[in-house]
Each structure stands twice: as structure tokens, then as C-alpha cells.
Length: 287
Image (cartoon, rainbow, N blue to C red; front, side, top):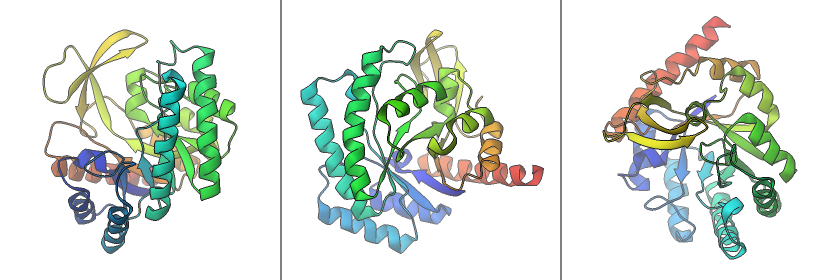
């Protein structure tokens, strides 16, 4: 498995500085967050070419572009058309950057609140995007994310079945699934099977109230809950089952670290990188 850093964890830096930090820390790649100051649908093609050159110089692959466009399930047709155009702009940039995958956000509401038409509409527009992605030789990924249609493996498979394209898959995110309070261990990996295209790694913890740095609130099936973003091993997300499941399924893709804990960005990424390397070694030893 290859290790990437999420550029969204380094938003205090330019994309050029972020790439330098990732290379210095020893990451294999960088997953680029598609919002400024890193990248957006409006980023000039000349600047994109500069990014590709810099990534190559640092020896960094770009496994995915993390798009924020979409929200098809709850948007009107005009807004969906705008989001589709944004996707097309990012698809062109994904080709230039040699990024294998492009993330679309499926939209809400929470899976346990969603109606059939939310899934149907999201599937319609993502299928349109998928047709263009296939022509460009790219894959689309939908992140398993709290407060979205895709909060669990079951809801992910439901939407994928409606889309009906084998080059559309999911990003497994144990941190998000912990928030949702759904299984995120080896069984979730088995259920997703070949539809698991990519993996995000981060840690979270349920807390009693918000207000301190790194805290946030979220609507779950239990009501409004409060969480703290943590460094790996300091929260309540047990990644052992996930890593074991990935080994058992012979997953050879990317793990992207996207820590947002209240520490200096470079420090928290370096910490999480050391931890995940140790965990991966331990999984190998156990097998």
C-alpha cells in the first residue's frame, strides 16, 4: 500500500510548499484538495502544468483530486449543471496531473433521512460524469462520509448499483464511519470488495461539547453529537480491522492521511505517518 498526504491538511501552505513538505516527510504521493489556494476548476492550465512538473521533481504521484463539487441529490437542475461543468474542468486538470481518480461529493441528506429520489437524482448526474471520466481514462470516487447519502457500506452499494458503472467506486473512511456509528472494520472491506478504490485515514473521538480547537458537531442517527479531531491512535477509531481487511483483500492502492487535529500541520502529518507505518508493519507481522 502506498501512502499519500491530503493537501487539505496543509491549507496554510501553497500547493508548491505542500508538495515540498510531503516529499520531505517521505510520502509517496499527494492527494490534492480542489479548493484554493491549491487547485480549483478555475486554476489556469499553465499553473496546473507547473504543479505536475513540481510533483515529478519531488517524486510524488497524485493518486486523486478531491473535488468538492456535486451535491446533486439536493440541488436544482441549474445548480447540478454548474457542478457538472466544474467536474469537466477538473477532469481536464486530472488528465494533465496524471491523477487516477476524481472525487465527486454525492450530497445529502444523511442516508437514514434520504428518500429514493435523492439517490435517483445523484445517480443520474454522477452517471453523466462517469461517461466523461471513462472516455478520459479516469475513475470517479465517492467518499463514505457522514451527513451524506453514502454513510455506510450499504448506502454506498445502493448508490453504486443505481449508477451502474464499474469505474465508479468509493473511498473508505473509517473516521467518517466512526462518526456515523457504522462498521468500518474488515467486514466493511469485504462488503465493498472491488468497489473500494481508495482509503482515507484519520482519527476522531466523541466528546461532550464543542468549543475547543479541533471540535465540531454533526447530525447522526443518535441526534446531534460532538467530536474532536485527533492524531492517529489518540482518538477512538480502531483501524486494526480495516488494515487487516485490506491485507486480506490484497488491496494495493493508496492510503491518504488527512489529519486535522489541532496541531501544526507538518507536525501532525509527520506523527500520523510514523504511526500508520508502524501499524502496517504490525499487520504484516501478524499475518
